[in-house]
Length: 401
Ligand code: SF4
Image: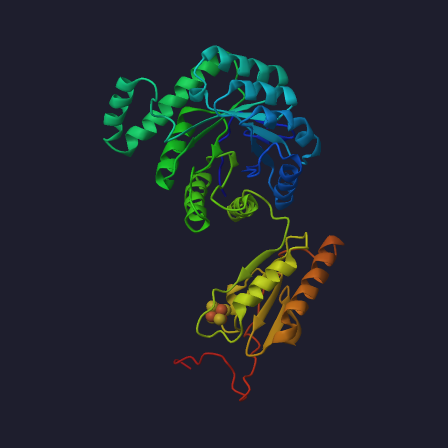
């Protein structure tokens, strides 16, 4: 069980971040925010996928102007992502957003940052203050930049120190204003750097942390990079809200974020969990297609039934231990078990529908209180063999007899 570090709690609309709140999943729309219908459609898709908080970019006045219309139709709290223009932050606060994402380093005038803080205080909304490895190097003062670059050449620890020092500088502004509803982030492109940076920030501050890896790349690498960093940090108890980000449909990010939290026991499942064997030389059906079909078919079930799809009856039962509903496929046939009890033997063509029917029926019994999830282990001793066409049984023969 993961012991989470307790941090100061802030509220983003109806969603708490930090304190004893569950780790929330965030994402960001990829639509032009001023296109209200398209943006609202994507926000709803993200919310439907399990996203708790959605961020929208507000680069222009036309984006902040439509925020009231977006807020009216959004099922989840909305964060305004502000980069360079403090006016956008003030307009977004005025529009009623639930949180601002601000980089004080991009807003040169301290008075303007103070104005944004004052507006957020008045509305009772938090601010996320973030640094990433690309944003911490001094841009204006060339001599400072040269000295920083010399320092950074000494190794990754120098970059972590610079990120931490930048956050400390920012936080002085917020402390002097007596504004404490701040969420911090310290992102890097590199997974190990992100881990080191967030660990340092977590040791230094008791503020809630927004975890993320920046510019993680395409799905194939970005997903792994994000999950390597965020999973490591979450396992250490660090992190209060997460965004997995890579170049893809943001709904995919939400699916990954939810699965990461469920895998670490930081979020309860609300939908079926699918276990599938990795396949091996014993496989006798097209299991990869079957698993994809089962996954699609189970998507409408809103009970966290554990379903196993195993490629054979040799090792399948042991590997499916703990499943509520399982199918063990053999040559052209599958045996279905529901909480350890064999219910049906079906042909390969019937397997998908039969498994779905058994899962729907079991979920309904759970909902009626007649069955309990995870109550009975799959316990098949020995597995019922499915004879091959030639009558032989596909079980391994022990040399010891
Ligand atoms: S369940 Fe059977 S087919 Fe699947 S990986 Fe295990 S031994 Fe191989």
